[in-house]
Length: 184
Length: 176
Image (cartoon, rainbow over the protein chains, first blue to last red):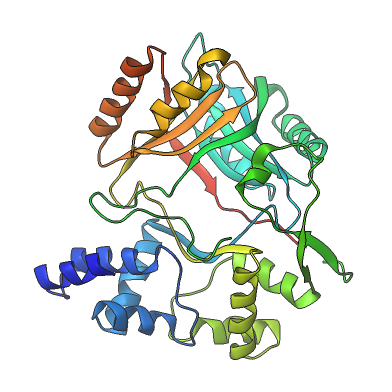
């Protein structure tokens, strides 16, 4: 990647900030599928394997990397339907509700967001996946039962069209793309 | 995990149109080992010299076979990605989920304006009064605010700005 080599020229490979940026750029499309993947990353960016491993452990510890894991194509594994369920729960109970909902295996994202009355009364968002819309409805009902009288109201918003889908920019000034290079 | 083989269909983003009627085009039949790998790898690997060797031992196969299987699962579109899942916000960006109630007759024109901003990463039509939902990502909260204000000004439509307050879980962790 040309950005990486530009950075390499500009900073010393021992600079932690440089290293982190180089590791992000070299791995955001995926980890090399080789026996020693972190060594391969190190070789690509011109750092030592030990430095790359320490850098990635540090990012894992502070949550900048959530996991080093496989992301399934949920359509491909049979989960064709997804709905954005939105919930109005008491602000004081949002954290306990959010943790409980986030722990469900059919929820892929669970966030607290602000209400915007009067147009938007919901403060808890949970993306629910199922094989079809009926299964999603059933899972939303499971959440509703679990949360019980802590819920004052909820809705499920289904996407009807993708209007734009590009990768989130991971770092200002760097190349875009959380988008996979291998996805079809 | 069931022992039977299940046909899977691999389709592009258009599959997100929702509903149950689309017929999936099967491209790969997942066998028991594929499913064990997909389930295991969603939990993540450790940072160590040979992480695939460790995982392979858990799965009762050798390292080279595991790597080949992962390559195949990626090539067949069963996995979209294998690697670090970055939290872009903790790497120094700012993001917000935004929604607008766009009149039907202006929908495509407004979508064009919104999509024209490079800071808009995803944009979805959703079945709701608030029918356009998009993510704005920029270098700082002030930059996000500027983009949100510019979208409202250019479209003349209120932008409901819903930045994350707390994250409870992110990740797809679907058993196959």
